[in-house]
Image (cartoon, rainbow, N blue to C red; front, top):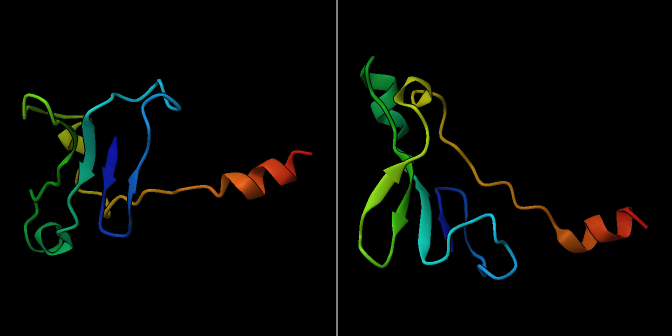
Length: 84
């Protein structure tokens, strides 16, 4: 699985994360100017199936005029130490 965004990109294995779909890219656009200039400007947040090249939007367009989304990636090593 690929997570693609303005601030960072990430690749994860489907075996370790069964709640996510294998062979899919999770994406968001980062075109802030569109939101600032046009009142009805919307952004795309979705999932691309890398096998059949279809995409599905995962966020309602009602919420899509919010600021650019970012992926927050926790440091699992530090989290593991914190829980001991």
